Length: 416
Image (cartoon, rainbow, N blue to C red; front, side, top):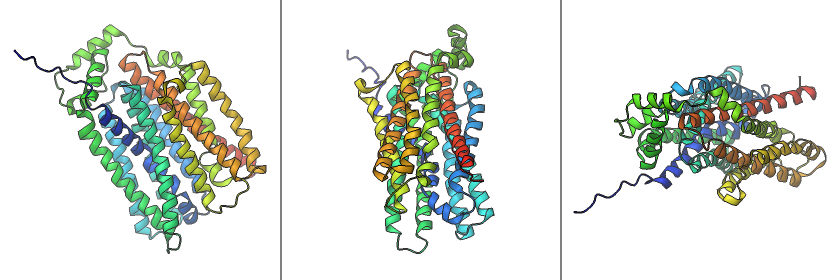
């Protein structure tokens, strides 16, 4: 008698890695698009300092919404959470197009308020997707988290590259800035809708994804029920997860956070330093240069590309740092970039500024992947999801603190 072949639970691994990369792109594409066309908004709203205002609005709504979601993460349907986030990114990008077309590209306080509202919507969508995806992928292989994080950086690199191309293509065109910006947001609408379709109908049906989510249920995970049902697995009763919670007795969020306090501090410090300089400092306080209005776009592109490269370095096992002490020393060591940037902006040339920007991006990407892929190892599935959400909150807190430090610096310079 011929035996039935054993099911290949890990089938579709490379497809899953590719989809994780695409989902990472979609998580930041809309916001990176808004950052990349900030020269257009600076032209439209010269009195309102859009590079500063939009960033603080985005980060405020992102960290506020994420705080609530982290508190409620154990009872949330991850599938609905992520689909809501990607859909909101698509609607926000479409709203930008409608707003610009309805006003014929004119500036003014009304248009600026509309852009600010959309920026807030992007922050709300980011809180849903970033925490939801990191928490969900933490239940699976570390490579899935790495691929998603690489996609986050790739969205910045791709938008920067496309911005350089459109700037050259439309440089002699009337309303060239506007045409380039509208092209960006049209691409964003399409891409976000593709992410919605892929996450809703393709990702949950991959064998390897169903396997890891099914393995999470006996450990007490309740956040994967919606995705398991979408993948065709209906026979895992909720009672199984509830009984597993009683038997396994996972750590509370407070205990889990205290056990991983070092990783939380590391991630906060990494993004505090990064967002002190990215993007506003690179757009305005750039020092001596001869590249004209290409220079800030070049610096943003250098940061994004080096950030992307840094997120692939940990794939080489010998180069991946897993020691919490080593990660903390490196995270604190990045504070040397603060005086280095200020000194270079005052006395250095464009070569040194480009070098420092590449170091900022490379270290940001490398440390992000090392921390997020090593922190959740050894925990139960509900703990992995909770910890992934908490670490994303620390990351967003670092971004917000970096933006606040930028405002303090502006006040010190007498900006008011």
